[in-house]
Image (tube, rainbow, N blue to C red; front, side, top):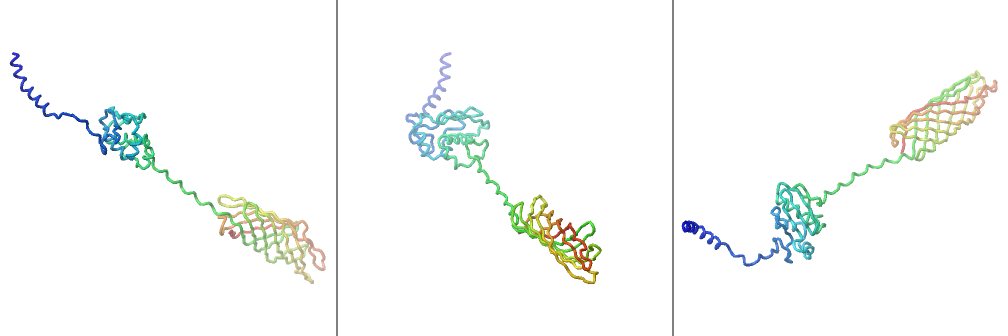
Length: 332
């Protein structure tokens, strides 16, 4: 029986010896690769570990695309054996570069992508400035050290609103009425007002031209004509759609009266001093042409006397004058 077993095993033994004879004897060490291998010119193996995904060679080639070769040689020349270590952990892998370690999860086992991720981490440790010229990776997840897209420039500021006008002109028709205990006097005319300056408080100058009108003083029918001018200050309160303004000042009026029914019909003129207040509203915009509506009132402390020969003194002119106007307002 032993002879039979020995005879049966002889063919297999010959096959085994033949296979051993075909295997080449490894009598020399593999030379270090200078361009596309995993060693640097100094003979130091830069990437070690037992990783099959990613491989050391693939990671080294990716690293060469991120960091200049001379920078890698300078940083890794004085490092100990295996300054870069990669360990394959199945659904994740671990990389250590110059004693700084990072672990990444990548369950798809995309070895090329793993090599890219490992090379970016190594480049961040070895030469961070080199990553400033690298575009963000296209295959997620991207390494946190990859520069973010540039921050968009801030939106331009809206243009500043134009300054308020320095000069304004208000022009429009005017209705005025003189009021007293015994009589009233009504006049139609036109109003002209001008302001100069910016701000909420500006000086204002105004003038009124009215048409002559008939009135009755002490039973004497008179033809009355009045030309007032005033000087004051205007307070402007701007709003969203309209601007409100108020005025206060003094007025001086030239008053002329002539009796109509007397045999001797002579004219008499006098000066009339009064205090004036006004209130107005103006539509937006501030600059250019717009519209306004205004009210005004005057108080005459000492109204002039009216003389009508041969009657003598017939009475006094009205103590109160009130008016309303509307028209165009132009600001520049």
